[in-house]
Length: 127
Image (cartoon, rainbow, N blue to C red; front, side, top):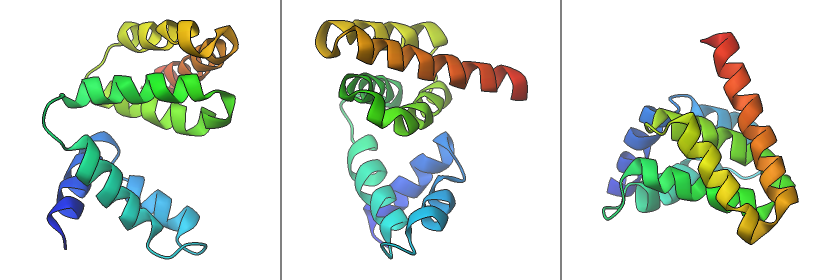
């Protein structure tokens, strides 16, 4: 196992312990090794880097997915969950999304706010 895969698995376990299994179940039949590749590359080589703490990296991810728009809704919701797990408050997440109205427009920010509301409501129900 590469060091990056090990780092990625450790980090993913902190944010979402089932992430690799869910990805493997959903995509590995189409693209064998997809889940492991994503964990190694995204989490082990990017999220695990120094220079920014995990909460900041996750807030940046939420911002980027918000600006990309509605087609990233599923990924945005997962990353909002990860951002909460990384220690961000709901207010920090909402402010990161709202800031993106300047760059992605109001529709993108509204879609982001709707995603955040859904994640927060689910957490309140489950929590």
